Image (cartoon, rainbow, N blue to C red):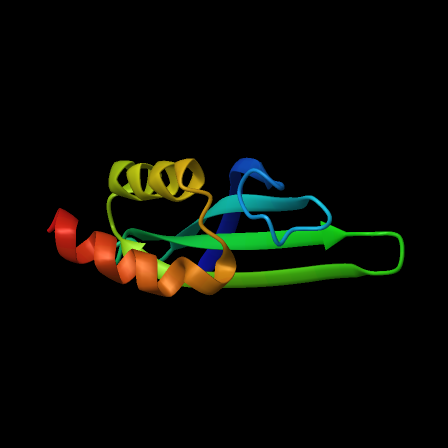
Length: 104
């Protein structure tokens, strides 16, 4: 199986999103394409990376779900919802579980 990652988009989190933030955070969204054998076809997943940099240190968190759908349009729809709502890596699995339940 071959895996390809495609950048989908990014958002910035700042004081408007949370009063607890002291430095801006960048959240990046990626579509994961799992290319299988011909009879298997493709499946799609999602990765979110959160980066926070200040003068003293850099912090990076990431979470991925390798395979959610076989439909790329459905995966793009989920990515758009995640981006619009500024979902972070720690929230990814719970949000996907809730969205998958609602969309099916």
